[in-house]
Image (tube, rainbow, N blue to C red; front, side, top):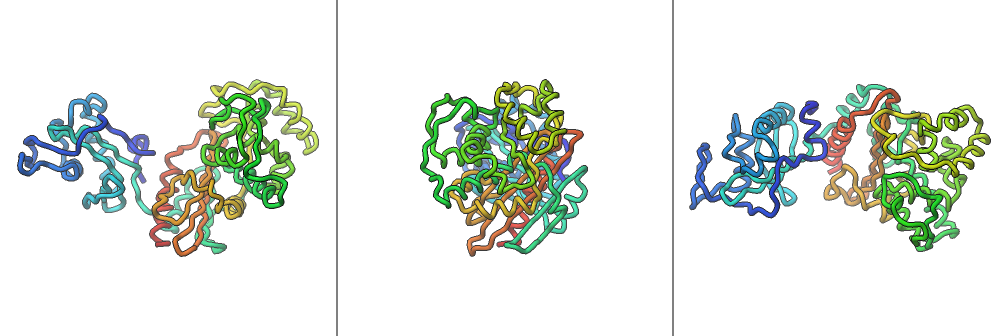
Amino acid sequence: MISATLALVLAEGLLIGMVPDLPLRATTVSTSPWIMTQAQPLTAEQALERIFQAEAVEADWFAQSFLEQVPFQQIQPLLTDLKQSLGAFQGIQARDGGYAVMFERGTVPAQIALDDQGRIAQLLIGRPEAPLSLAEATALIQAFPREASLLVLEGDRVLAAVNADQPLAVGSAFKLAVLAALQDAITTGSHQWTDVVVLEAAWRSLPSGLLQDWPPGTALTLETLATLMISLSDNTATDALIHLLGREAVETWSPRNQPFLTTRDFFVLKNPANADYLAQFREGNEAERRSLLSTLTAVPLPPVTIFGDTPLALDVEWFFSARELCELMATVQDLPLMQVNPGLARPQDWQSVAFKGGSEPGVLNLTTGLETADGRRYCVVATWNDATQALDENQLTRFYGDLLLGLTEDAG
């Protein structure tokens, strides 16, 4: 596992220093063992190899513009931490317009640019890639604190499962159920993807998304709303679709979550200023809850700033098991809009990738549907809940990304 120090830096890729539009070339002499001359300049690949092979980096390998962004004393500890986590350096390979830095226990994507004096002016180190076997992934998820689940399917065959039938809060992954209900309405002919609807002020929610900032009266097709809901997790687009379809239509795809919450309901009930409404919701039966939700439309949305790092009322959520999410994914993953955001999977490794995730403080979910070139299908779901404190998102995303890499190797 990557250390906490490095995890903070490498979680989604680290731009250590950058000056844009610089050529990948070098023209001056270095004092290091890597000798550059006008006839044989150090290449970008060689410069990258040097920083990982050397016992200690030297300040004159880096452009001043780089060092103004990242103090030199921070560079060596990061590189040392990386090598300690992944083992001995093995080499460099060109990949995807950049490079793959290979270690004993994994690979790190990287990009580098040199200034006109051959010094490093840009260095981008991506998330370490250390493929996990299914057995390793199973053992790791079992060690996650609090509640966690994992399911890996090939078709209907279970490859790995930990608490796969345990309902957990999944955040915005619930939007798969909304999409399934929409697809069902289109299949039955009650709606068409090209139907145009006009945004209503009552549908406005809080971010994530774009539509909360768009004016009421904006015309959008159902396909546009669905694409924004899945690819950008747009909450206003989601609520628009729930209102158009009706709660009951979505509940047929999610019988556990009744009444089915809109994202606006979710935010209003979690607002600490609305503790009385939350108490009524918790204490009420299903009919009383439905009645309460109808009154919440007149309650203003809270400011987004009230939602920090502390979990708030995690019983106000959408609860699905990993198996249920795989069933929903199988229903909708062939829709073109599901291909817009691949999540943590590498699209070049698969014929198609469909993704939806969800998060709030104390809740994380990642759900991916994958298809190989020869038509084999996989579903990978990981969920993690902790009602007492915020989760380390990097821990789950690293785990999940490495699991997908391991699955890629197995499926290849």
